[in-house]
Image 1 (cartoon, rainbow, N blue to C red):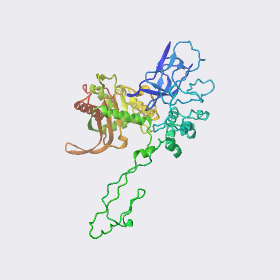
Image 2 (tube, rainbow, N blue to C red):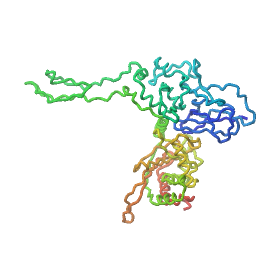
Image 3 (cartoon, rainbow, N blue to C red):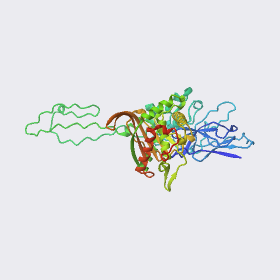
Image 4 (cartoon, rainbow, N blue to C red):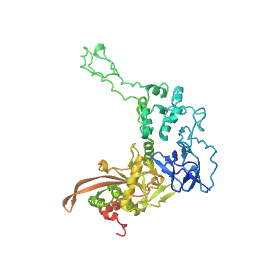
Length: 509
């Protein structure tokens, strides 16, 4: 009996994934739940697990291929019969216009899927396509031959990540001239991006479209007619150097005195002329930009802010961390996540998603944590069933997810089903901010820093540690009163933090 391994959907707008690396090969044994491949999405590299135990029969995609969501990528034979391994592995084609990297055999006896051969053979899906430059026009023949030719034997032996190889081929950059900064001299994406910025002037001229002007003349203001004067008294402004204006000469007798005419102010260069200096965006940054734009254009946000007194929460955290092991040490963000999860369990309006057909309830309280990545992007791993998870366990899982997110390795289970996100900029010292909802979630909580400030109570002035939190909510799902009630539930638990340690609902309290 055969079982298919499917490319899963791991994000709201994910339509495909790049198969980065096979962890199992034909003939290998695999257990249910064991990783079989690594897949790159726009934001992160994740491991795909097998849902059946047996023997890997066929690999239906090659490393570097972009595979649509829902497409089988491998088959696993669950019975004892093994298929014939002598048949050659089919060579897959990448997405139209996408280069397919060549992977060197790992060693004698290793079953490795290859993707292309050096020589005259062509890759399916790319025949008849004319090489194109980054500017969108046809690529000059010299550049196409020098930098987009099939990898030579030397390039086959270069250590390079699949993402870096694909990026180099998409942008017409030869790997042979790049020094890798990854482990063991491996070329990574950052090396390719750096090489693109430092291309030689000759390569830039070849890559630029023909007749691209380097500058464009800027029309100056209309000048009134001037009386005849000595040429030295009225120098013509030169665009290459600033003009120094002296005292105006006296006008001739019988002529009106005219004020000096100011020289036209220098204009910024045409953006087209400096486009080669633009800093390329990473895939993660591009994905975040696209998703945030969709959110602001399609979700009617509204905002509610409350201050929270954190003195008791800080005391509880210190007391618990005195007795907990280091890997379970509790952070302020862990306390906030737990308070949010318990408040969500009492606010059904926030535990659903918007669809054109109506409200779609969610089955669990899964809270995402916004994590900044080293390359400048944002990724939000998910704490599943956070309302039912004890606080020390929640703190340990959150720490593991944050570390995995920053390294770019998360499981598929850690990337899906979130209903709510917590975004914390407290470490940055901000007093307050608002966050943008991640579709299809219902809301996001922006958590600012804890700051000491005066508070008037019963005609007395006290100094308290206070933290401002702001809820951004989807107004299609929840109204202002319900949003305020949710924040009051969060505040009640953080100001009486021992309620975070026991399962007590507001109605039972």
